[in-house]
Amino acid sequence: MPLDFYTDRYKTIGVNVRTRFDDNVERYVNLRSVQHPNLDFTKPVKRRGPFSLFNQNHQKIAGQLIQILMDASERDFVSLSAYIKDRVNPYLFLYALAIAVQHRRETQHIALPSIVQQFPDQFVDSSVFPEAREEGTIVPSASRIPIQIELNFTGSERDQEQRLAYFREDIGVNMHHWHWHLIYPAEGPMNIVAKDRRGELFYHMHNQLLARYNTERSCNNLEHVKSLGNLRERVLEGYFSKIVRSLSNRAYPARPDGAILKDINRDDQIVEIVQLEQLRDRIYQAIDQGYVIEYGTNRHIPLNDEKGIDVLGNILESSAISPNRQLYGSLHNSGHVVIAFVHDPENKHLEDYGVMGDVTTAMRDPVFYRWHAFINSMCIKLKNTLQPYFYNDLMYQDIHVISIGVQITTNVPNARPNVLLTYWQKSDVDLGAGLDFGPGNVYAQFTHLQHAPFEYRINVINEAHTIKYGTCRIFLIPKFNERDQPLTYQEQRLSAIEMDKFVVACMYK
Image (cartoon, rainbow, N blue to C red):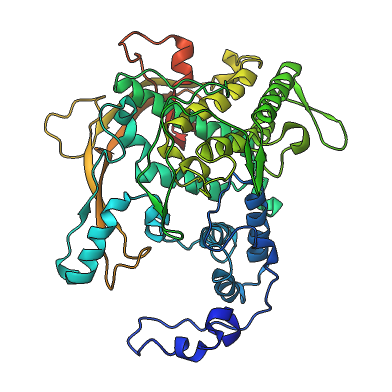
């Protein structure tokens, strides 16, 4: 690494740092000198502080950093990334780098290390770290055993919400939330942000999360989540995450039962409850009117057509392609902020945000689903204003589905058709890459839901006398609620879980 890459702390001992490895290293990467970008714009995100995509200032800073990484030449990209890495917040850097790697032409094929491996502290119960450190320090690498993470480590059975802890605290589902925001960033180069139907997919993804979560609740004899549309009511559900931020070695602050949401008045964020209520009412008014007003032109952009849900999704999340951030604000993100700082709204106690302030941890909190039930309800309100599909809109002439079923494909004795098998599985995650536990790997073992592999069996008749191509979409829909009462058609429609989507060629005889 060129000496000018070293930060002020290491410049005087740069030679020592460069030669501290012996000749047995696996690989050397020679970095070349590059023009140093001006990174002063990143200073509001402190090097050892938190980084939140729900903070509009942080989001814009991330967008600028993504632009720098996207603009780098293929020759300079790796070296420029190395130069930036030690000068900005690690979470900010990783977010921007991951987006750049996934969207640059020459790096799209590269599989990035899992976010869990890089920052395990955001996914794993911190109580396992002392045991992991002991394992890494004392036990030889070949003899180490995984550290067990309890399935329910954040609360006892006295809290009925703990019945869903296996879903909310699942490492996979929280990784998904992080990954979605990598694919669909709200700020950055327009060719990355303005993806086709981005706002609609914001609605669809969260709608699917709620459909699955509510179905899991029904299976655990709990009613569907209640919308958090009234910001003046107490948040009855508390949450104590038991996880820490390794950068500051501070725990994510907890939220006790019955917390009251308050105005946020902090150095870099000011959010008033009345502001959120005004934004909510403006969006409701726009849905009722059937249009939103574009900033600067006052042009009416329709909501009551096939693109309306896309426009509404971008407004709710306040992405860079929102038609009017000034009028409609950032309702979704600001709600996350108000909930995330409920424990210290005025920064009296110098506490950072709770788990609702971070895309890698927000889904752990029961209130995440209540907040998104409210956001989702606004999208459904718009959907209900649209004309329904008619038979001719949905039919596929000459194609007739005769039967559909599923069959387990593994060697399960007496496996019956149309019966799926789910079970608990234990998997390992490597803590050694993201936390310093000495040489070698140190694993934690967690329990999660798994299912036996299965296949769809669909019989179709093609009467067109030519090959027909179509998209097959398969949904899993619950029939009963938590009281074993049949769901209405409307309830079932809103509870549909998309299982798969693929293109098929339908042959003919």
